[in-house]
Length: 300
Image (tube, rainbow, N blue to C red; front, side):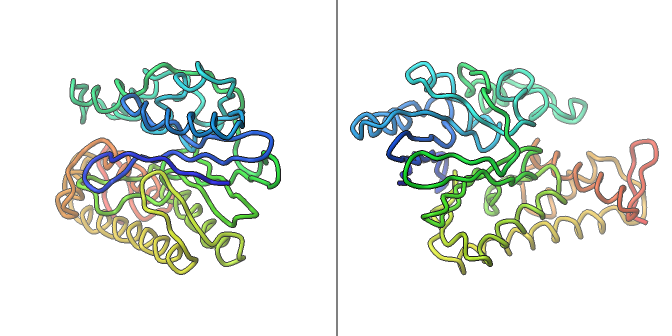
């Protein structure tokens, strides 16, 4: 029913795609990125052996390592691309994706060949998004039900897939990596917390007992899933408290708060962490715990 295919990404972190295979058709969850064609070919060869057509590609979200081979797969199959409605522009236009994901603050992080090689050059041939979704939509591949679940926050639009009969949730990056050299990050802390709460609710209700993701090893039981959710909830609280402490006293710029947050956390300062810090600042200003004047932030 559910099959995973993976390759090492860096260190002990993998890049993984999944197939959900029914009696009528199959769904591919994410397509990896340029340079990982052999992993995706392995999945397509498996489907050919099963004699089941690939009907849909579901992108959990529109980051380069999840959408990069959409066009490559679509050129070989009749699969239609489905993704969160918010991410349609990013999926269909790699240049817009790169500008808004990597260079959202060009006065702080400038374009570079290294960044282009890491992100822009891994996106391959784009493919149009045939359907934009937001969660609660269903697939019926044959023999079981697959429901799309809203899991945004890491980006502004992300979905997971709940295979009901197997009680398995397939996710992209909602369970962010915590032990990476940089912040894996999220752009909307409030929505990220809600998505973690959604996973907690699914486990509590007995609807999810296993979780598969794009980068983490499979989580095999409810207690393990709950532990990973709790760790990430605590990580959000820790970053929130750290930012509030850093901005007590003198008003500081986004760049200054980002650099100090990265240093205090032992993380390499880069664009993912910058977007995360900016998201926290927006939330704290909306909530009245911080103020911003002339692009400088201060805790109240």
